[in-house]
Length: 229
Length: 229
DNA sequence: GCATATTGTCACAACATTGTCACATAAATC
DNA sequence: GATTTATGTGACAATGTTGTGACAATATGC
Image 1 (tube, rainbow over the protein chains, first blue to last red):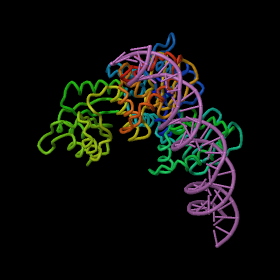
Image 2: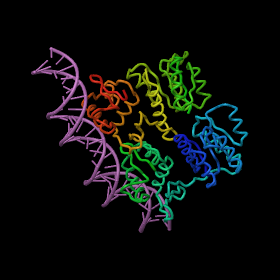
Image 3: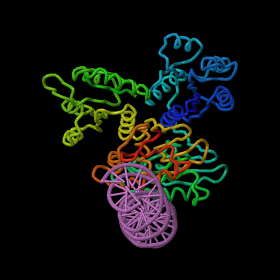
C-alpha cells in the first residue's frame, strides 16, 4: 500500500511517514505541488494525504487546487489536512472530491485509523501487508528477513538483526537512544549495551559496503544509533 | 496529542494552555478534582498536568490524591506542578506514580520541553522530536547533540556540553547563576566552579566564531553566564 | 542427538570525554 | 601599587565509550 504525503512542514511530514510505515504502508513524501504531481504520475499511489495550506506553484495555489487537479485524472482516495475547523473549508474540500479531512494537530494513531477507514470505503479489501523498507538502492524485506542492494544477491539476516533493522528503518532519520533500541529488540528493561554493540556490529558487517565508515547505521556517540541520518 | 490541565489558578492554567497549544498539543482545562475526573473519563487524554495544591472535594484533598486515583485506572503520564521544592514532596509524588514534577514558577518553554520528555519516555515512538533551538543563524539539535551555523558542517557536542547548552538556550536572554547551572548540568551535590569554567570554555571553542570575544555565551562576572544577552 | 546457526560474554585496543592542576590574565579591593 | 578574587586556558591523567575478535552458551533444523 503506497501512500503519498504532500506537505511543506518537514517534521509533520516525517511524523506522518512514520505513522504510515508503522501501519504497514509505504510512504512517499513530496514537498510541493510540483513534486506531488510527479510522484503521483510515476508511482501507483493508493492514497494521498494532502495539506490544504500547502503553497503550490503559480496556477496551483493550495491543497484545494491540487486536489481538484488530481481528481480530474484519478479516483485515488484523498485525505485533506487542515488546521482550520472552519466548516466551510471542510465542505469545500469534500465537494471538490476529498474523501476525508483531518484537523491538525492529530495523533498518528488517529491518522492511521482514518486512512484505513478511507481505504476500506474505497475498496473492500484493505489489510495492508508489511511493505518492504527502502533507502536509496538498499532494501530490506522484514517478512523474508533479507536485505539487498540494487541487483546484488540478497543477504539473510538473523531474527535479532532483522528486529534491529526494522526498528531503525521504521524510525529512519531519527536518533534512537540505545535504551530504547534494547527495549524494542530484546524486550528487556535491563540495559545491556554490550549486546547491542555486538548486534550493531554484526548487522553492519552484513549491510554496510564499508563497515569501517558506516553509511546506513550511524553512531550518535553517547546517545544511540540512527538509520539514514 | 491531548493534554489535560488541572488547576484552580485560572491565569496560570491559561498560560499553560497557551504554551501547550503553541507546541502542537490540544489543551483541555479542568478546575477541580471532580471536573478533572469527568474530563479524564470522557476524553482520551495523552498527558495530564496536575497542580499539587489543587483543593479537591471531600475525599480527594489535593493533587496527590487525585494522582493516586488516576493511577488506579490508567497509566497516562502525569506531571505534578508544585511550588515547594521540598524533596519529600517530590519523592512522594513520584512514588505515587507521577512521571515528573515541575516547580513553580517555570517558563512555558521549559514546561513544553518537560512534557515532551515525559511523552518520549512514556512511549518511545510517535512523539514529535524535541525541537531544535535557534539563535540567529546558529542552531542546536539536542536530540543529535549537534550544533551548526548556517550551512556549515554540524559539530558534535558531548553529553555535558549538550546539557549545558540546552539549559542556557532554554533560558535564553536570562542571567543564570553559576550554582544553578552546576545543579542543572551535574546534578544536585557537586558544586565545583572549576568544572563549569572548563565546560564553558570547551563549549565556546566549539560554538563561538571568535572564542576570544564570545558572542553567544556571555560571562556575567560575579554571577554566572547567559546565552544571547 | 548431532551439526549448524545464532546469540551472549569476555577481553582489549582505540578513542572520546571529563576532572584536576597549574598558571596567566583581568578586574576588584584595600 | 600591591593584593586578592574571579575567570580563561593549556596540559595531562582518570575515566568512560565504542568497535572488534575470539570463544562459550544456547537455539534451531534435520
